Amino acid sequence: MKKIQILGTGCRKCGLLAETAEAASKELGLEYSLEKVTDLNDIAGFGVMFTPALVVDGEVKLAGRVPSTDEMKQLLV
Image 1: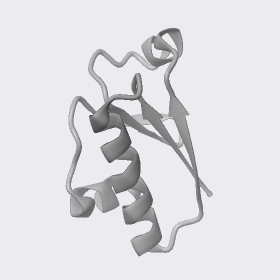
Image 2: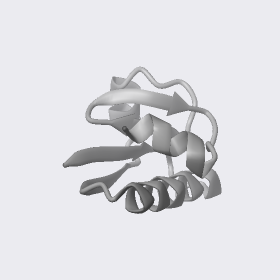
Image 3: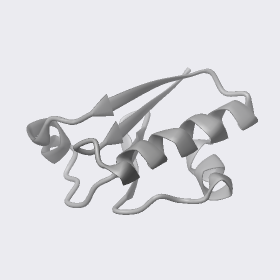
Image 4: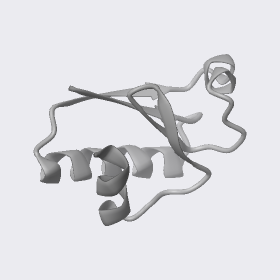
């Protein structure tokens, strides 16, 4: 099971990143859990300077933008 974390304060782009991650995961048929991390100290703990950010299985994959669904699929596998 993939652990997907969305790092951000709850802005519009953070929500869009979560939606894109869910859509891509479903299209790939992945089993996943999705967690939204909104605490600034927790976000800083990942070393992320820009949000929204995508973390997959503990590894920061993307920060500061929302990828296309196709790019998201590549980041999740």
